[in-house]
Length: 145
Image (spheres, rainbow, N blue to C red):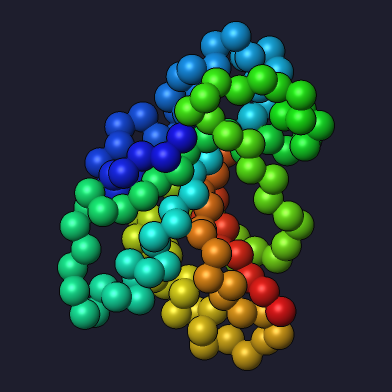
């Protein structure tokens, strides 16, 4: 689902029931899923932060469930406000942290570290992803060769 709010203004992020609040009839198939969000505007926000302050209500936040096994979601009939997105195999910079309030700081520090490193992978510009695991939160920044 796409919400036009910044993550820090959305209550319930990381709670499986909130991420799947219209999917009660699919709980058996989705019990192994991980709550996730994708932030299509986060990289742009970080790049333009020095120039101007973005209003929180201009930020898009896509929330849903991350399914480890692709076959699990292939035959599910989803309600209208959900859509299935197949994310191709790729490289990610993965960072683990404890609290969603740390997201902005963790993102900034990771981008600086990635830009300083001399390696064959670069920040792709695709939307960063956040996954809520049982004992930590994971930020994934897509990379490209």
